[in-house]
Image 1: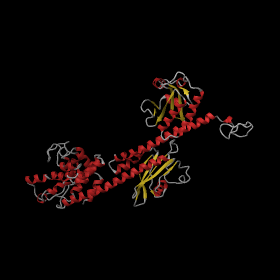
Image 2 (image 1 turned 90 degrees about the vertical axis):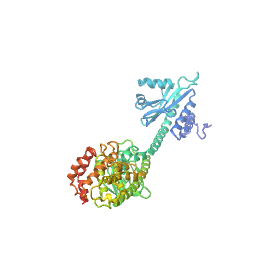
Image 3 (image 1 turned 30 degrees about the vertical axis):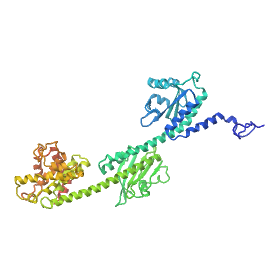
Image 4 (image 1 turned 180 degrees about the vertical axis):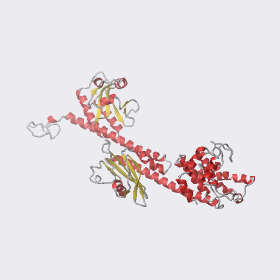
Length: 549
């Protein structure tokens, strides 16, 4: 009579040719495997760790389990459910040796076999945690985690003093099952942290004070979020329908312009769809594309823009010899970053247009004021040009130069409150008239004081007639008024010296510089004069000055 096993349909007949021989099955193993299926139902790394701890303590009574997982960010092994209690550095000898162990071993034996002399780690694992066994979880020669099996506080007298082979077998089997889950969980956790970290990317963009700074630092900012070997950013040029490279990293030589639809980046931009390619040389299409030879290995390419405006495309790659090739999650990260970039650029461009519009109004106002007198026509615009160039040569930031631009253009706006009889007088002013003309700085200040937009420039208007020793309109000394006011003052005096006046002819450039130099230490420091003289001696000044004639 044929015997049937407890598992229906599996024959025990020794004469049977069926491969389902009970000698090949262990029902305890089957039951155990089904039980371990619970470990596959994790949602987070914390959930997986907690399930494993509960599983071990259920199957091995009288013992506790402590799981130390590897934290990429802190470069150490720590307990995920008891954060900050104890940690072990990833570069310790203990971790290095444990990475070479493939199965459960007695903890004391492990220290002895590898000659590990680390009293601190030994003390807290063996005494504090009452560790008896250690279970390494290694994936591709990388120690993902390890489990310390120790006696519990409720350790009973008749509990096993050492684990029998079946329990050790169980732990090894558990480690094998956990290896895949722990690796998947650690990858998932790492990807989630990377994506969450992308929320900090807008802060990196916001620290830049101008659109030019954003463009210049874009790839450095991206590299802080996504590591890459080489990268290039193209801007779309509407007039020529070309993609113009404005930033590159890890690329030697010149990067050529691309036609839309040409090369990898051009095709991505044209298709309006981002791509991820694990290996360019193995790709049936992109391996044949000749343009952009610097894109090698795995790469991601993402177009960026808004619903109404196409701005450009970013392409990053990790070379063939980089062991960490890009994954699809990096494409998602770059897509998130690109949306932030597009938003930042669009906002700055809008602000730039509004600023240009505001400046056009300011310029029209000063032109209207100067139209009253042909001798002062264009004065404010020239002072603006000179002051901005001094600021550039002194290394001012874009934001500071923006302030100088407005301050210089508006420095005489207060003269709108001065009578034409004084402004247009062709002879020397009386003391009373001079007192009135001096009021233009205060009038100008109060005009600008009503608008917070001018908070950073109104003091340039108020104090551009001060001197270093306090003999100016307000008696302010060096350090008591903004440096920008001295730049405006230097530019103002130079333009007055080189302009036609009813009572004298304009001075030559050299003569004006000579007179201006006499004011060093009085109206402005020497470094301001030197910066201005450097500009006046430049080809840039010559072209500008010739254009005024």
